Amino acid sequence: MPTDAVSSDDIASLPRAEFGFPGPLRDHLVAAILDGSKTSTTGLVIGYEHEGEPLPSVGSRAVVVDSDDRPVGVIEITGVRVVPLAEVDFAHVVDEGEGDTSITEWRTNHERFWHSDEMRAALDDPEFTVDDATLVVLERFGLITNLRRAD
Image 1: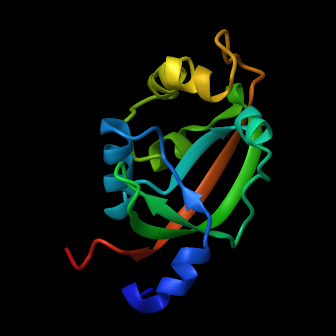
Image 2: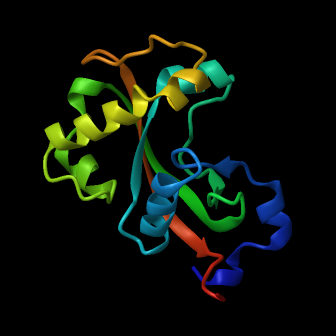
């Protein structure tokens, strides 16, 4: 879809998609979304519940923001599955575009993030941990507008 497929009014009205917390991780994830190597992500069901947000739905769109809170792209959700953490498959891992070469490596990296002080603070739970039964949201998406193309 061309860059002008989403109007500035549309962009202003769309929900925001924040990948990770602002900083190097978000910068890396946003770059992977914009270059097309990241087409999936994993969220915690408890995170949606804590924020009082509905789970993503197929066909919905969101504005991806960078670490400076600037809109950099628009994605459209193409698939959503809720599964226990133990059931995350390798195809999903690869499509996350983070360079993980195994499910074990992916899980180690994600657990480091989910067990971080930032995530525990965001969930208001200083003891938060995940295990095999933790429900996660496996989200697939496509980039429909890259707002950085003009840069």
